[in-house]
Image 1: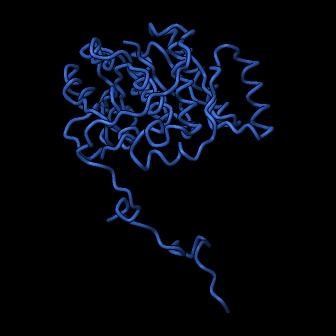
Image 2 (image 1 turned 45 degrees about the vertical axis):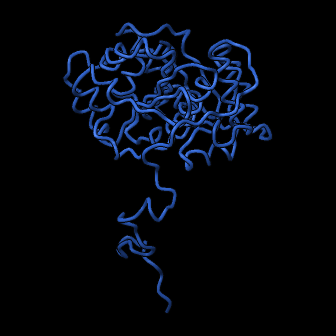
Image 3 (image 1 turned 135 degrees about the vertical axis):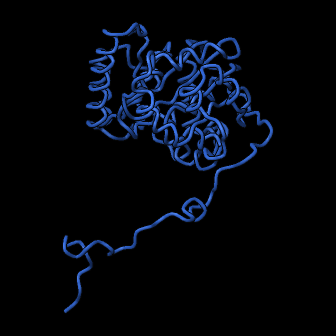
Amino acid sequence: MRTVSIANQKGGCGKTTTAINTAAAFAELGKKVLLIDLDPQAHVTLGVGYDPDSFGRTICDVLLQSTGLLPNIIVRTNTAGLDLAPCNVLLAGADVQLARVPGKELLLSRSLHGVHDAYDLCVIDCPPSLGVLTLNALMAGTDVIVPIQAHYYDLEGLKRLLESVHVIRNRLPLFPEEQIRLLLTFVDDRAGFNQQVQRQVRDVFGSTVLNTVIHKSISLAEAPGAGMPVLSYAPHSRGAADYRALACEILEQPQRPAAPPIVSAPLPRAIPKRLADIFNGTWIPKAGSFPRRFGLGPVEST
């Protein structure tokens, strides 16, 4: 089983979008795919239509309790050939709980042995940090995709990630560096600055940068709200085309016309669609409620 970890310690670079849609594109190509949500924010779980709070057991239990539990937490998604290992906010405590566990960086690798023959590919969404969870994904991965925006802050984040991976590789038997690939995301062909940064990234990193880029697309922003990959939500959109191209490039196979999305049985529980439902019972601050002693309160007329 080939395992693709999507990692970058900077948030907002398109990791979760890339994990969901690359996994869906692999499945569309006829591969049997396992998608693992290793980010406590559980955005992958939400993005394929599940409520993270609906699960009694998640990937957190696999890491903390039993390496043989993984097959029992996997659920189907509405994309044919794509299964999910879900998570929820309880995973946020894993770094602390695993801090003194011997061999903690290999827990996910050992768990994946139990499903190795059931899937062609595994895609792992990492949290925006380089803690125990990301380390587990890096150790389990045969490939690492690092999504980066053509922005200064993202390039600084990439620098830190590469420095960290270099340190890890010197201490632990990790994947070969040739398996680290960079993916440019949120690309706007009309922006001159975007083009300049893209050229410089390719000049510096050469073939480490994937030829495929992910363009800015409204469909990529809308699809998570519908609880499905963009390949099902807007199969003829530019975002869908970009991720199909990415999957083909990773698998080193020519692109072919996409088949119509095949939808399996409905999911047992969908995410709420209205903001009023999502924030029901949540404390919401009111405008002008800051203490006046900080000078942040509303100005009174005289």
